[in-house]
Every structure is written in C-alpha cells, then in structure tokens.
Amino acid sequence: MESLELLAHPVRLRIVHAMRGGRSLTTTQLCARIPDVSKAMVYRHVDLLASGGILEVAGERRVRGAVERHYRLRLDRVTVDADALAALSPDDHRRVFATSMAVLVAEFNAYLDRENADPMADLVGYRQHAIWLNRGELEKMIGELRRVIWPLLANQPTPDRAQYLLSPLFFPIEQPSADPESD
Image (cartoon, rainbow, N blue to C red; front, side, top):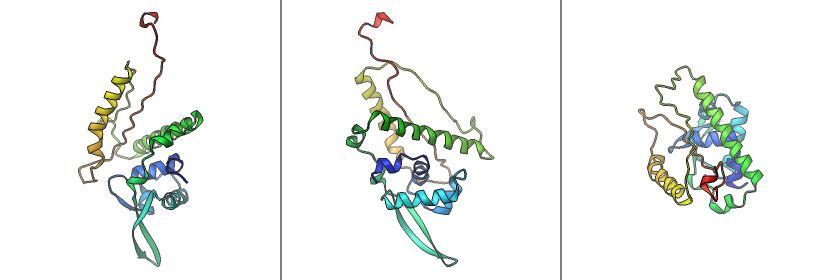
C-alpha cells in the first residue's frame, strides 16, 4: 500500500499525529491518546501502518507474558511526493480532503471532551480568511508559512509543550476575472 493510501484514513492519520515529535508509543498508549476509537481499530491500523513502513518497532519488552512493542514514526515515509499528488483524480482529492476534515473534527471533539478543555486559555483558533492573491503572492505566502513552520516541526515533547494540530488549507474559491471591474 502506498504512503498516500495509508495516510488517507482518519484513524491512521490521527495515529501519525500522535506519533509526531520523535515519540515512541505502545498501542496501549495510542489507545489512551485516541479514546474515541475502539482498541481493536487502533491495533488494526497500527498493524497496517507498521506493515506499510510508516511505523517501525522502536523496542520490545515482555509484559506479563506478552510482547509490548514501542512504535515510532518513520518521517521519511509520511511525506507524499508531488508526483503522487499530481496523479490524483478530482475524486481522489475529494477523498483526501474529506479525510483531513474528518480528522480535524475528531481531534477537536476529543479536545473538547477532555475534562480540562479551555478553548480561550488554550488559544484555540479556527478562523478562515478569504484573501485575494495572484500566483506569486500565494507562493510567497506559502514560502513564508513554511519558513515559520518547518523549524517548529522538529520540536520534541517536553513538560511545558502541548501538541497542537495546525492545518493550513489553500484552494481558490473563485476564478480570476479578466476584468476586475466586472464584479
């Protein structure tokens, strides 16, 4: 199974998010991190991600006669290359986008279901802005966002850090007009 196909599933994508930051987690720890998903489903998707090379076994130990595996994310396998994206049909794009939205909704609901959830104190944001950009301005904006975000992706979990889900989405909502005065 290709990386994109493996990642284009809400539960598998949530597992990938949970593993970010160089974490090494057991399936039991993942179940605790994603409590709204059944244990059987988490185990099944961890197995698929491991079989597909997205997760690797970081260590094993015996616990009451069973083998407990710690998994870690293979960062080189969670990137989808431009050729794979270019080969997607419109329906494939719809499916991948729907998966992304399902993950956002599931993660936000899991956050709100926590006993200590405080959107104001946690600086939760879900703003949308419709902005007018030409191709060069869009590329410059994406470049600036990457410049800011890339270094932060290397942050490791520490006691004073919370994991945030950042989901920049870009798509045109209107075709460029040949005559700007016609609007």
